[in-house]
Length: 475
Image (tube, rainbow, N blue to C red; front, side):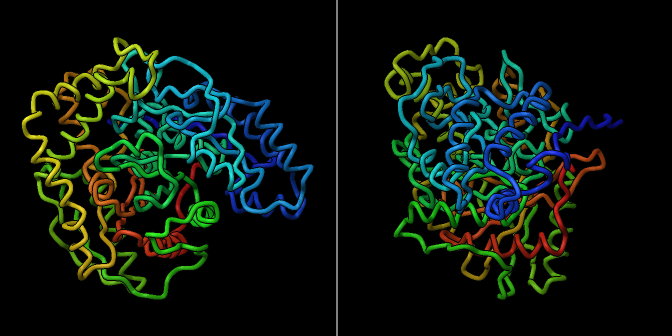
């Protein structure tokens, strides 16, 4: 028996935000039909309306945001995303607000500077209303806690938003802002995009300026980006971000506004690395997406999963290394005032998994270092890989809660977040598109991946698919 969906959103036609995406709002500003102040005020009113049910924010800066909006209004001559309200995930520093990484172990100390990525986003013109929830240090694929209120999915408030960028995804889906910051170390842009019915592009490694915490990783698996409700917003964001930082080792993207002409060779698979069965709704979503691609002239052929079962074990051990570093070295690596006694049970569980398997780590690292070249061979005769984004649709809250026994948590997490980690290790781009819904109305994401530096293929294809089958939003 399915539960009745409880949807929460703030869309209406009576305020300045309306149903517009970020590009649409930029056009409204440039033609004088609204002001940045009106947009920011409307976003705060929408937030006040829905956040008591979604619980997606951690701190706000209304005075600062309105000051920035008024400055843009006074300057006039709007360009880029100037004056568009947005939100920052709470694992990047924002001047005047604390950064707590979703953890009760960290103090609420205001930061004195903006992080490099936050500054790059600000340079595109986005006005940050405040910061959004994530699970502790982004170590899991749901935005839940053992001792605090989880973020709730606006499509069905009894279900997970996914993670780790779950707070951002919930508020974009609910219509509070059209675009919000997200980042991805194992799927954390794409997973919440899939759960909340959004577009989530994980870019190639190094596409945006380097995330400060990622600099210390032996393999940088973290990419920053955004979640949006339209492909054109995603394309516009990366074009604007490129104006402020362009990685010379990657082919430039530019502003992609139309589908590509080339008909693509697409390799489709639905098998999990773990070997467990993929949920029928996720399989159905992929087959429908494949049929749509074929109807548009693309060649789709079924392939075996191009990732070995060993990869899942290796990635989990690497993930455990991150948790162990936090639990053992947090006072030195994160914040001297960190109280490691307040860390989540899952963080300790992952750290313990690493400690028990420490002897395997050199072999794990050797295989992970080799994985980028191995992954690239999948594109010797293919342009794009097509798979589910997740092993199952957004589960009920509690299914992935952070105080489960570790073996059970590991089993559930691996079977849920089954398809996204490969691109983090390989450094390659991938995008989740909201192309299907369950009978309950819960979004189901479809995952397209490309070779390193080939975001353009994913954006062009996404634009084409969105035109052919407009994505369903909450309103």
